[in-house]
Image 1 (cartoon, one colour):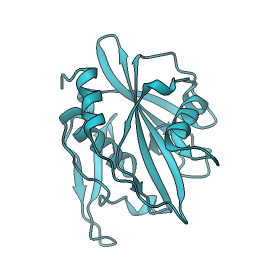
Image 2 (cartoon, one colour):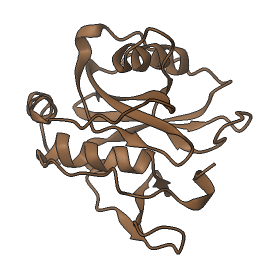
Image 3 (cartoon, helix red, strand yellow):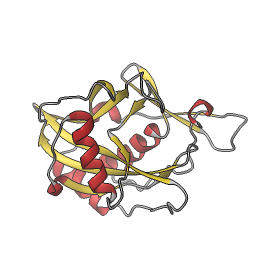
Length: 199
């Protein structure tokens, strides 16, 4: 994978995302932050702290629920600051991917930012146990799909950091790979979460 930042930004801006209704659901946003370490472009992935009430220890993108009056971009920027200590400017916003509805009652809007050189990180240890910088080449992998009796849709798994990432994060990462790296308008809303993530 040898895509440049300009081409990646152009791919995301050309994509036409699908928004889902949020009435009666909790609207959240996650940040896909493209940044450069040396000559390598990558994004940040976190592992949630084990003490968190919701989804402890799971892999996630920086993000959280929208506060009153916020849009998805505002919320993603705020959560990026709260979780990783990164203050990103509004003009780093590139675009959004498709909304993803979770089994636990959230509608997640993935927001893509481009920062250039990676700034220092100051993770909030109350929320973040680990931060990984994932090179774009590592994201350019084929996902795995499993069938489960509880759903007619396949469960997606993305192999990363020596583990398997599951939806919703896996679905978002896969669509980012397809849209940003390859310019393919691949849909992921139907891809299933494992049953243990339904709560």
